[in-house]
Length: 340
Ligand code: KG4
Ligand code: ZN
Image 1 (spheres, rainbow, N blue to C red):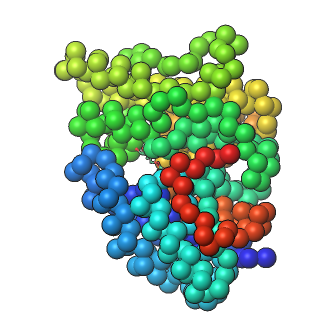
Image 2 (image 1 turned 180 degrees about the horizontal axis):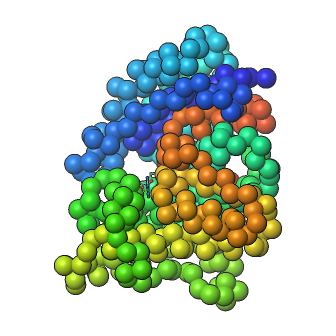
């Protein structure tokens, strides 16, 4: 069995490499963030991101190997994110991983970034039992997924417009709070009153039975974003901390309500949270409350494992290799790769 896996993640603006043993022991995890390069543009600039990955990939991989205490030729497989993400960024990580796999003569594994976010939970809680419901909330995705067995997923619902992280980033940008917006709103919301304003919760109502099936587990955040912007535009003196606390509460309410409905309808005994927005303090608190009251085990990865990293890529790569074998070396990148 392949035990030592080098993971590489370059799907967006983080260049990351990690060495993981047996899919559960993180020997090293290095994340080099490009936030400073992108913040003056208020978002990730794809061309700048891919060029930065080219500069950073070799030092980051070298640092991950040194920190792990593992020699390159002890690595038994190399896994890299092949999608979804920015095409130029993905190409850098996948090309580096294939080159290393060829040099060391070990398998290459193409990993789905969404699946990697899910495997962050298994890294920290290897005894997690299936089936489970996974709520994935990141900058590019908002998905409610039923994981029936390793590698077998059913997407229960996704966002009809903006992803939750995208809504955080857009609202923060409008309010001049900088990029990325999620952590800025999370911090400022601690000083605000979350019941100050009742912003809309789309597709959330008291009786889920009145929603058609294709909307029951779906999300929508663009109306909420517009409501916040219109409110602040007409009330320029409103306290920003109250606005962001109320906005955050509306996002979290929608997320945990759909999770609760998914737990009721599937009857699973475990749920896990993943993706960058899973680092949000209020979401973490409400996620555990919902799991507790539903009587299911709630798995909450550490904040570092929620945001993009390569340890989760190595962990997902381990399972993919075990179940499906290596990926061919001509596997390309897929910016729009889905979970199923
Ligand atoms: O998973 P991730 O690191 O990258 C993608 O795959 O998209 O997620 C990044 C997203 C960004 O939109 C960022 O604003 C959001 O996660 N985020 C947060 C927090 N930390 C990161 N959103 C809310 N609260 C946070 N504490
Ligand atoms: Zn991500």
